[in-house]
Length: 112
Length: 113
Image (cartoon, rainbow over all chains, first blue to last red):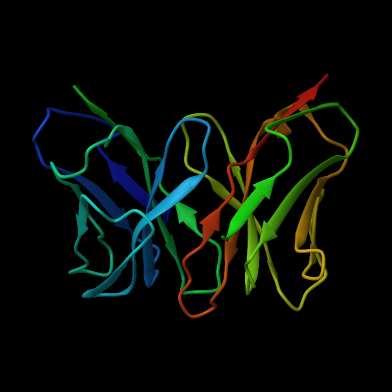
């Protein structure tokens, strides 16, 4: 079955560490997105990519970095510059712009 | 400033009734609007997408309307069931080419037996 796989499901980060969240899709979708969700709130866009080797900043890109070297993969690195990284991170893909998203099951990141 | 508002954080209704959820927006000219369902601890699931030139979309017990004059979308679930209990998110995209969407905070629906 096609879908999006996010890993790990839970991640713990120490202060000052960089961590990378994995997102892989086998839907042959061109566009991929990273959103952050805080408790009781909606999703806020971190980065998005419409095509391989190209990506754009979303509304809250500071402290995050991404790469899109393959169509299937869009990893997100949470750097030590992100001061409040504890949140639920969601990766999504869409066939192209103008279509609904397919979301992964999320990664819950906690700073310890 | 741009804003998306979904009606009250929580909505409680009786099984069998129609649930109506509201998504209002200001300072947007959306190209299309989407509705998603999210269960606790899970990723959202896409339900319906409606474009700016469409007034209404239906899918089984779901119906979405889109009024660009009122700057509002209504999401209806008819003959609601306890299994429909979840948080429902609306999302707006202002540019068909960019594809990125901005989400509201969601409305939590509880359907009581």
